[in-house]
Length: 240
Length: 344
Image 1 (cartoon, each protein chain N blue to C red):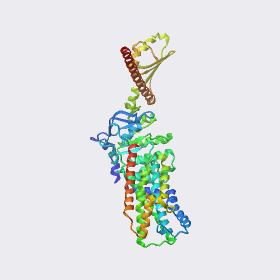
Image 2 (cartoon, helix red, strand yellow):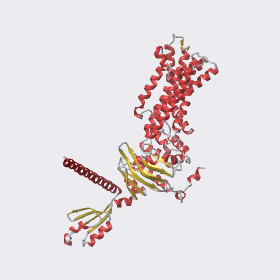
Image 3 (cartoon, helix red, strand yellow):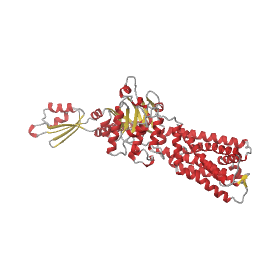
Image 4 (cartoon, rainbow over the protein chains, first blue to last red):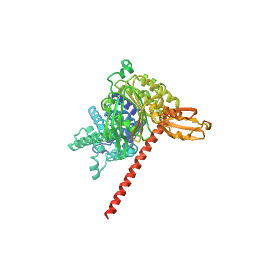
């Protein structure tokens, strides 16, 4: 199994898509957003630079764990590689576990790149805050990796690409990646997975405490995504 | 450490108590209203090389899927090495090369083969597997940059990455040129000689003829023939007898109609052509009838013709059954209508 994880990780790092969406895109967006909000001091209680540091770290993590993961699973179902793997001595869950593990390993660079950029822009946190924030963001990636697996099995391989893009884009907008959403719609939007993820990041950063509501919501999403992933994966195994 | 494994000989594998490789008991598979596999029973024995023939849609791939546990039968049971197919695969007893078995993209051939060797419970060394499959020269290429034939050889390497007892190949030589195909079968023969059981589905009948010691023929979901390729040819009734009859020999050609075991009879001019189920009996009867055949020839036919004959026979039988059914239904309807009219 570790062999498969290593091989999967090697593939991720070699893939140009990973480089673009996980490393380069957040860096560019960070500069654009900080520039665009240049006049505003704080967003949701933190400085603009800090707000977008978290937003871009979560963006990188989510694109690595969700979109890349989901589209690769869809492709491998189509090509028959997922089927071929089932004819090896690898345990049945090995494929999905390797996908999630290699994804988790590949999100770390995405987080670190944005941290370095923000540090260069003058964001200062204590050592323990950096570590706590990094770990929170990284842990959140697993939740989205589970969602990525679920999406990868959600439809016929041919029609999956638009599903991924729609879910991804809607989640980012509602999640406040491109700026905070206000008004009554904002009070709904803040309960979407990406918004919660960002909120956790900002809380970890500022050291304030988080309410029971968001905690339960995150736990609920994690369980729901894992359950959905397991269900869709089993369904695929029975059908193909 | 791997040498002791590799030294296992055919004799050891075939040894007493080695049991059955695979058993299908009354296996059927339906997809909605379509019956893809219809009540198949068969047993694969250790050391056999079995060809699996049948036209497209005959149910070969579905049967192979059930053999490997990728699909469950709708009814009946499949056992592999005495247990479930899944268990046999987890134990590394089966090496598989699927027709549409995708390969992992973005990695090198060597990396992929090394992975297959590593996850096999009795995996060989990657170098050796690459060598055997004839892909050492392309080991450093990316998997996504291979030709169709090269991809097939990589799939073959994955199927033979470890010491498996059964090798299953679904149309292994599709996309290979003649040379590659011959090289492939030379390697497969070595696998079979090492005592492995080999099951392969193919469209190339000459491959089945020259390589398999047992041939299974599937047609429309049913297993319609199971035997050596010689037996199948014989079952198809296909020995051709041809000879000339000269008028001065005073032959009574009507005698030809009474010859035994004849499936087709064709007389054109002085030349007689006969297909026979039992050429020996037919030829003996020709002489007994007092005919004087000149230039008598008895020839066998290839598996291909036998195959066509068997599947055509089956189709004819199906058609008769269908007609019979239809006729019975019509008769039943007529009786019913008659009944109604009488009641009025």
